[in-house]
Length: 212
Image (cartoon, rainbow, N blue to C red; front, side):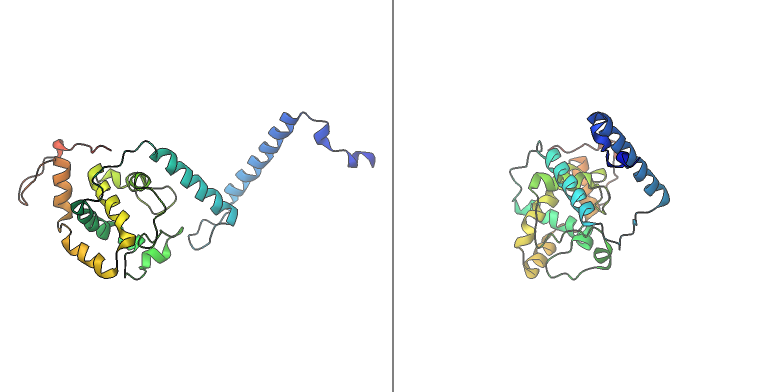
């Protein structure tokens, strides 16, 4: 019996069989851990370093792959587009991603993973930002704004985000003041494709999707 203790079973099993058995054991252990609630899902309990690295790389590669076929509009630097995006960003995004001269909000401090402060750095291309804003990101607080906003409005937000790191607090406030004031009316105009007066009735059947 003593001699059996020194036998490495890997040399007596086909490599494929050993791999399958290993995967089955790991899967079983993982299933047990999930069932028992071993992993702490709380937002105030950070991931293990390896877990965070895995999720971060999965996210970045997924976004990059899906954004490759997206064509960026040539007028992304148009001041009107940047101004429109500024209003949308302030209303929809600044609570999490903040803005120049803006202190951390309660929601931004409670998020995990933390939402990037876009006034400081933007690590994504315009196409990638468009994809993120439109489709959102699972297991984060980033929503899929494409469910409620057409492509043109999303590109407006991208146009502003591209300029955001360049703005001082005073410049940010100036851009905000120049932004369209009526978000709902702007959305309706974009969806309908024609200017509308404030008291015109909406026509839900006339909505059309934006294009890349």
